[in-house]
Length: 114
Image (cartoon, rainbow, N blue to C red):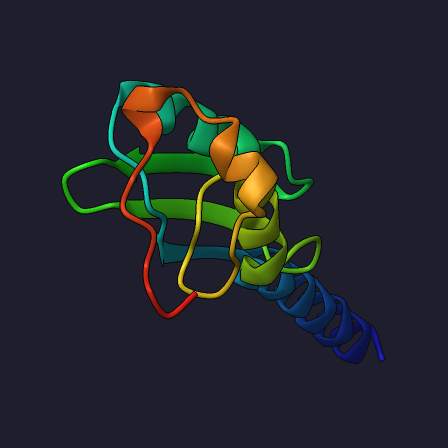
C-alpha cells in the first residue's frame, strides 16, 4: 500500500511538472518595420500581452521571436497587439490610422496582399 501511494505521488508530480514545462513556447512571427524605433515599439507591444516572457525583433529579417505561456496567450493575440501599434504581420494588419501614426522613419512598404 505504501509503495503504491509513493508511486501515485511520483506520477502526479511528473505530470504536473511536464505540464508546466510544456506551456513555454517559442515562435517566430514576421513583423514589418524598418528601424530601432520600430524594434522598441514592436517588442513593447508583444511584451504587453499577458503570458509573453520574452520578445526580440530583428530588423534585417523582420522577425519577432517570442517566448510565451501558451496556456495564457496565443500567437494571434500577440500579432493583434503588434498590429494595434501600427505594424503588419502575415496574419494581422494594422489599421490605416495606426500605420499613419508611425513616425516617418518607421513607414515600411506594406504588403500588397494585406
